[in-house]
Length: 90
Image 1: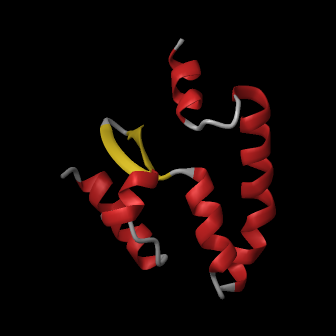
Image 2: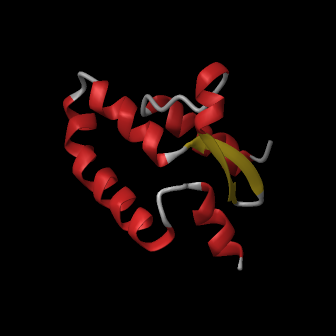
Image 3: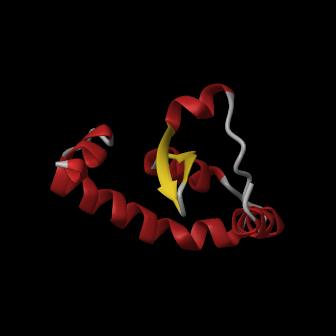
């Protein structure tokens, strides 16, 4: 693992962001490319669902931006998140 990626992951961990997905969450994840590495992250719908159930005020404050982003993506690409990637690759 490169030093840059290690530093980024360490920063995410320090910020309380868990980047390990398994079980049911894996089904709700997508692959992204980041600095030459393929990472698996939660899809936007699942991220919103988890933030809605969170008791952390910061999570609740982020919800309007995430929900508006999802609304705009669905308006542009349809409600199936798999379409976002397919359309971006065209």
